Structure formats: structure tokens, C-alpha cells
Amino acid sequence: MKKKLKIAIQKSGRLYEDSIKLLKDCGIEINTGIEQLKATALNFPIEIFFLRDDDIPKYLEDGVADIGMIGKNIFLEKRKKIIIKEFLGFGKCRLSIAIPKSMKYKKINDLNNKRIATSYPVLVKKFLKKNNIIAEIHEISGAVEIAPGIGLGDCICDLVNNGSTLFMNGLKEVQTILESEAVLASHPILNTIQEELMNKLLFRIRAVKKAKNNKYILLNAPNEKLEKIISFLPAMKSPTILPLAHHGWSSVNSVIDENDFWNIIEKLKKNGAEGIIILPIEKMIL
Ligand code: PRT
Ligand code: ZN
Image (cartoon, rainbow, N blue to C red; front, side, top):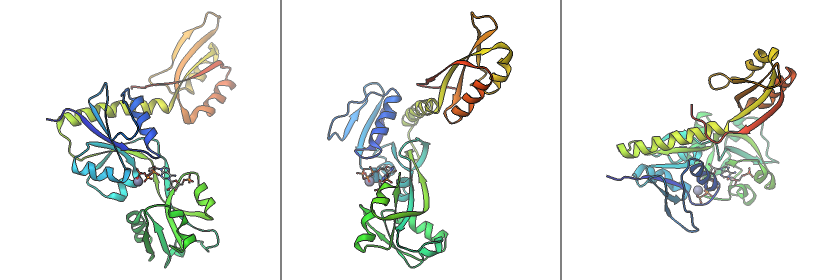
């Protein structure tokens, strides 16, 4: 029986660095070299295959790799028999319809009878069907944004991040059809050893993700305000309170959500908290 978990990640491109970083944050040491197609981790039974992102779903379906990191956009477009095990929080983008600035557009129906250039024919077709729009899909594999300029379509459907590529090509985004981010996908049925290894890796990935969304907070509080201050700090169970040498004051240690950060800090300050220190958390296991 195979004893290693085979993971496929993008060989180069937008997902490569974050995929490698996630594995490293999970404590997995990899020797990556230029032009390498395969690597073995030094301290975890895992083999890493470096592949084109478009090919990964098929490799997972065929069982060549057990798990892989790909965009949700690719997962949905390729429609292979594979499943999503976890959202990874990087590679965020959206798949959107964009039109030349000069084209008239008020509502989705204005796409009727238009020619849409895209590398995502499956997702675009699904979107058009759902909205009862009859339009022509022109599948092209790259540089979709230049299509309207060279007469290859009236508008496009492509991935957008900050929108600068659209802007530079005289296009504007009018309709998002999918929000995407990187996911960990897997073959639907793994053997026991692979399943165990994947769960081990998933446990680590979740701890890394959780830590990224949280910060450790230390502060000093006057005892008469302690109750109020604690009410703003959800913590894992409850905050740690330690008396300070300075009479009538305590030190409070807790964990706060990155998204509530500024909101909470304001409330803490208003209630007399001092010496607030915020620290990043490396791993978080609940
Ligand atoms: O060689 P390989 O086939 O592996 O790579 P690729 O060229 O097909 O893919 P790559 O590296 O461009 O993208 C890999 C994955 O990253 C995608 O499938 C998405 O899940 C994710 N991702 C996140 C993006 C973007 N953001 C993104 N902005 N993929 C592509 N883009 C492109 C987009 O196509 C457009 O050309 O970037 C341009 C738009 O970016 P902005 O910032 O100007 O809006
Ligand atoms: Zn690709």
C-alpha cells in the first residue's frame, strides 16, 4: 500500500507561492528547485507534484494525486469527480463579465445576442442559462481581455482581482458570476492511510487559518472596569486575568478576531485599558 500522501500544487503562477507557504506554515519542509516536477517533504509523508492548475482536477479524479490546491473557479469549471475539503483563504478573485466602456449596459438582459469571450465556457453557460440569456460563447485560452479589441467578442468573462487589467484594456466589470479562492480538493475516495494523512494535514491547515484570523491581546485594566472590559473580549474560554504589582490594576490576556480588531480597541481604550499589546499568533488549536 502507498504510504505517502500525494499533493498537487500549481507549478508556477498565482497560487504557487501561497500553496508552498501554507505547507511551510503547516511545518512541512520541502526542497523546491527550479523546473522540479516532484518533491518529497523531509518531515511529513507527503509527495508534492508541481502541475498546471487546469490539469490538477483530472489528476485528482484519476487518482494520480490524492489532494490538490486549486482555485474554486477551476474546480467548478472542470467538473471532475472530486470534492472540496477546505477553503484556503488565498488566491481570492472573482469571475466577472466585463464590457467595453462604450457598450450600453443597464441590466443582465443586455447580454442577449452578444458574443462573450472566455476561458470559462462551462461557468458562463450555466450563468446564461440561469438568467435566461441567449448569447454566444467564444472559448479562448488566454489574454481574454484583448478579445473585444481584436473583434473576438463583444464582451468577456474573466477572472478579476483589483480590476487594473480590465481598466488598461478599456473594459469595465458589470456582473460577477462567481467569487473564488483557493481550495483543497481531493479524490472522493482515499484509502485509509491517505485519508489519515489528509486529515492530519487538514488539522494543521485549520490551525494555521484560525491563527491568521486572530490576534493575541495583552492589556492593563483598572479593576473597577474589569467586568466591562472582559465583556468586549470573547476569548477562547475566558480571558486570563492576573493581578499587577500596581495596586488596583490587572493584566488581561485574550484572543481577538482580526476583523473586530479596531472596533474592540476603541471600546477598550474608552473603558480605561492601557498598555495594549497585540501579537500575531502562529498556530491556534481549539
Ligand atoms: O500555468 P497555469 O495554467 O498553472 O496558470 P494560469 O495562467 O492558468 O493561472 P494563474 O496563475 O494566472 O492563476 C491561477 C489561479 O489563481 C486562478 O485559477 C485563480 O483561482 C487565481 N487567481 C486569483 C487569479 C487571479 N487572482 C487573477 N487576477 N487568476 C488569474 N488572474 C488574472 C486574470 O485572468 C486577469 O488576466 O489576472 C488578471 C486580472 O487581475 P487584476 O488584478 O488586474 O484584476
Ligand atoms: Zn491554468
